[in-house]
Every structure is written in C-alpha cells, then in structure tokens.
Length: 181
Image (tube, rainbow, N blue to C red; front, top):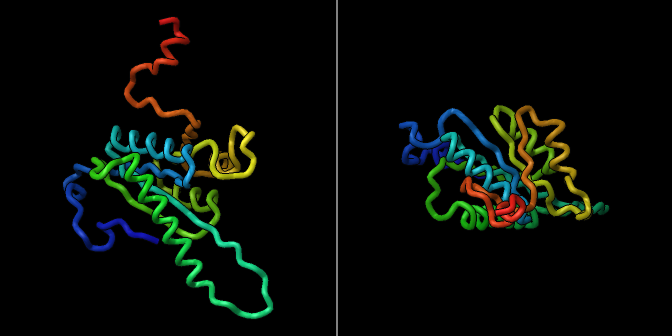
C-alpha cells in the first residue's frame, strides 16, 4: 500500500493550514478503463468544489495456480503492484495534471475491487465509481463492482456513465442540439 506523503512524515504544502483537504473525503475507484478515468475527473471536481481530500483506490488480483509444491509468488505480486501503481500514475497525470490543486491520497492494494472500495469508503463522504470496468460483459449497463458498491457502501455512491464529463456547467454541443439551439 502506498502512503500519502503527510502520513509518511513528509510535509505537504497546505494540508495543515486547511488550504487543501478539509474534513471531507471523496473516494474514487480506478482501473485502466476510460470509464474510471471519467469517474476520477468527476471525483476530482467534487473534491475541488468541496475542498475535500481525494482518495484514489486501485486494487489488483493474482490468480494463484493450485500446485502440489510450494512456490514463492513474491516477484509476480511485486510486478502486479508496480503495474497498478503505473495505472494510477498515468490516470492521475492525464486527468489531474502535474500539480493538482487538491489533496490526493493513493491506496493500491491486492483484493477484489468491490470489497476494497466498500472498505475504503468507510468514513468517506462520497464514493465515485465508473458504471463499467474491465469485466467481460460489455453489454451490461452497470458492472458488478458498481452494483455491489451501490448496495454495500456506507456512504452515497456516484456512478459515472461512460460519456465525457461536462464539468464546465455549459451545455455540450450535443446537449444544445437536443434542446433545439
């Protein structure tokens, strides 16, 4: 698990003065899908708007083969962890840029996505998830992780659909077309 710099003893500008990350917390689930990047954009917008801390949660899973003798999977587990860190780094870079104006925490752990997200949302003010992830049933409108979070998370859950977020407050051209403009 990666620690936020303030938890590891490193000073983070603005965190003590209340400039960044007030008492609120928005948790967002992230995988390598476009839908989760949209969820990250919405979660960041909420964190910015409310002056809350943004916690990015990424989990990974290993499929352990059943074998008659003992093998150390340490190297494979480390590789999965490094790959998960890279997913978070790339998404954070593309969505938040180099210098986000919000306090960001990262949680990268091994586990099942629904379980990890529900546990991470304990004490959060909002959980944000994409409507679809990497699952094999692309025709479903709501994925199993999103559905599980809706039913089990202890806080409100925002499910972000696959379309691009409109965070400007202005109608998109497609919205204007529907409204007859």
